Length: 323
Image 1 (cartoon, rainbow, N blue to C red):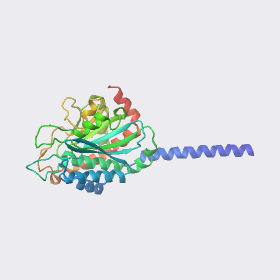
Image 2: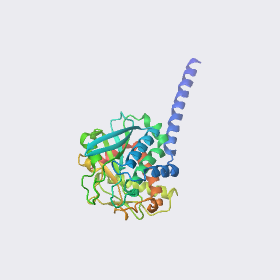
Image 3: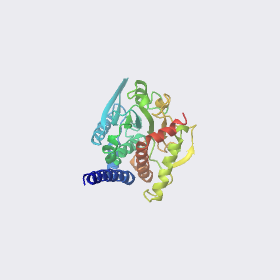
Image 4: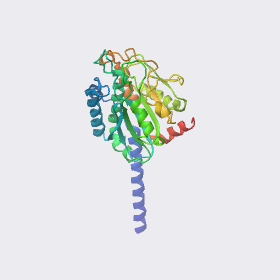
């Protein structure tokens, strides 16, 4: 009898473990990303203001980013640089003790236009910032539960300051201040960054997104596949195809990932193939945004981030093949 009871006890334990495994597998497979339109619109409204470095709007947006990151469960930090004026990068980190990180980035400052004091840079920074916060919101249950127990990978959201040149000029004079500082002083050790994904100029009509680096082309292909899968599942808004499996590796737009790639960090650049029609003009505002593309991006990109965090070693091995 004792032997039978002992065997029954072991079987019960095995069945319990198997049940937990099945439940975990089902939870992973059934995790659904939803577009939180109210949150995205609220976030965008708080960013969509003149916010050139040193302006009142700039400080308001920086404080808003800090508050949102904290409320979403990130450790929020200010990374300050003094060079003629103060620049402040805003960082949100989850799994701070992890040995490696996925870094998602954009810039939150707007350009100062002397003849357009109300310029808000909707596609030029604002939408991208709102998308990154929406990623954190859409994945929040996953990030706070399963992801927070991971010991091998962390997530970092970085909103760079000083992206725009300080003068009212078209040229990129004295630009990328925040990202250059971050990379040069290694605010976070660069060797711990598996991949940086930089977002910019998102939200104008008729834009498509191409691959800009050979070593991350396969990851770009996965973005395109996710879009197809979501469209076939009727989860996307009616809109033209955003991500194309096209290699455009010789015409990337200079952005905040440049100081990182020069140090050997793998990068993806989610930026349209051409500049928005109203780039650096006062018409780059809420009224000229193309919402179908924004809604779809807010489903495609979080799904990619989720898959990367769950399978980062597999993605990392793909990147490593091309180094």
